[in-house]
Image (tube, rainbow, N blue to C red; front, side, top):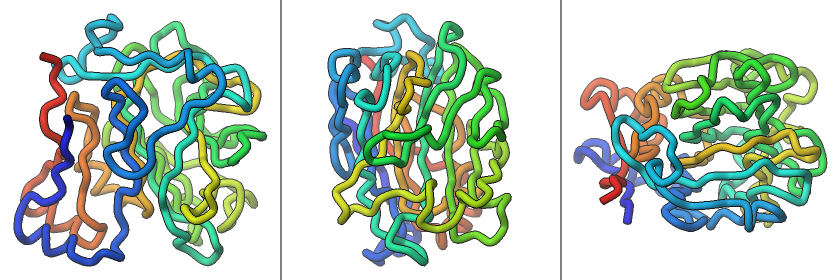
Length: 279
């Protein structure tokens, strides 16, 4: 079993004492099933039920992560709105509307070179009834609304992050994407970037899911997942940098944003899990 390491020093643990702090509200590890280590289990739907497979980087014949074998999930190409993975992020409304307007989504992911074109990563529509909201495009950039940045190298594990803050007045800070701890760029959301709009997420008391790796008209492709994490606040660039690139240990957990400087000054690196090595 994997275990999330929250506190590294007594100083950091003090920062975690406030139960109302922003936090990781969902984490999924893919150790042979869809269970969560934080929050509610992932829920496959449609062809994702039978099309998903669990194994190791070795058994699937894909690269290890940082030189270590890891337990992962292979996900299939999905046809449409009935197919995909429902996630219930478990976040409360956190802005000027009754929605989750600030959040972060991180994935350790690999797409093989045979998976091309647009590939949906995140969908905020509970019914998966419209176009997805975060994509890899045909040039392996990350983004939305025609603004794609960075290079998600095929046949390579990457840690990708989406940071959304719809309460931001600055359009260049509302929708940011990162690859391996470094900022790839932003996408201009235009009028769709208002709080409570297309890019907001349903709060936990609504009972409505979001989706990953799914799109209403099948803009998806086969790939592999190692770890997924959802947080109910917009991580800073320093916090994303601390999480860095993918490891076989998966995605770590960092304290609330107010303690981020303590992390930078004191420790430099936080990875939140005991060994995921395949024995």
